[in-house]
Image (cartoon, each protein chain N blue to C red):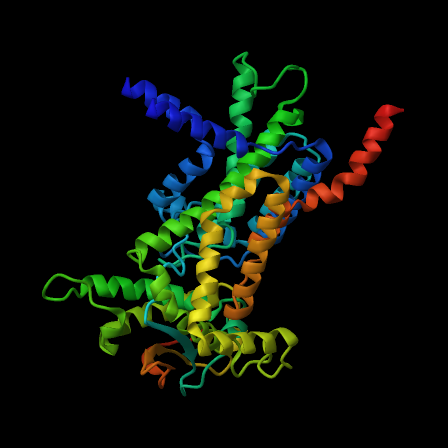
Length: 166
Length: 327
């Protein structure tokens, strides 16, 4: 009786493909080409940007020197490592610390991994635009609301890697 | 009794949200449009390794060979031939799987670079995947001696040339786009613990973030001092406006989320689809302007499948064909 009704219900449902795809995409999460499109699913009170600088701390034009990698892509890579750091540094009560509560020392390995990834990506294309650069540094600028105003304080140095011997 | 009322209600809506009738000229322009979008998307920036495997790469599949210029050139030519076959509606059983496989391979490699991934090509690849599956379902039905679709009176006509098959191919493509928009609403509601509308007052933080990210893409580089365009100025003005008036930003985002949630209503009629498509394009344009993000491929898909550009473009061809048939 119930099964027969469910069968009739399924046959009567409009947009069955849409419904199936929503379920599949939600369960699959981020597995290309499936996605549950989680971007901007939570507007938090804190975010940040990262940028790359040379050995003197002078910002480098990332898109130009890497032939196409943008700061948003670098941040995605770095943020992935930061999430792993949060999971590995649980609070005493078992909860995951917030990204903004991690110290620079805790974030350093994530910065080094992202710079290594960036350097490999640049090496696979061309290092010509890094003439005179011997070190890549990564900086983070936190962004948050304080007293009703958006604040983006001084950049924090996170990590660096040597790039001698291109 | 109550159950029957539910079924009657659903059946009524199923009828209302049925497929639009598509003719051969419109289907031709739609294929041309989709092929153009795939071609624009394909030469993506590639990467030498897969540090964070995603999708098929998680199952051990290695797509880093795409980073080899010679192999990539071969794939580009292969895709080109497949797209031509797709546009002329020949050997789709070969063309569609090639197009889908190449899009999945390049997309998987691109998204295997970090835990956070890009989202610009998934709807296009999903539409190709759905069309491929739908083609093989119909072909297997025919091979088993059954009709390919619920209206397949002449088995001598190729499956892809039957009106019912391509009408449903378009219907399923539109449903795929609806699913992509609607699942993002589910994500917004679940991942924010139902607080999405409340938290969207923090939207200006994203504007500042994107502005800074754009700055560090070009800082100290050759394009740093390029003259600001009208679009740059409009972007700055819009950003300042939404930073100064965060509740207006919240209203904008809420209306966009509602558009996404109810996008299936576009299937009520061609006109509603057109109006709905235009509204979604306007929404994408505002977000692009304010946040500096690009939704090029979403907007192109909307033009092809919602707004009805192929219908408009194909009318002279349809008229010519009708005239020739009458003669």
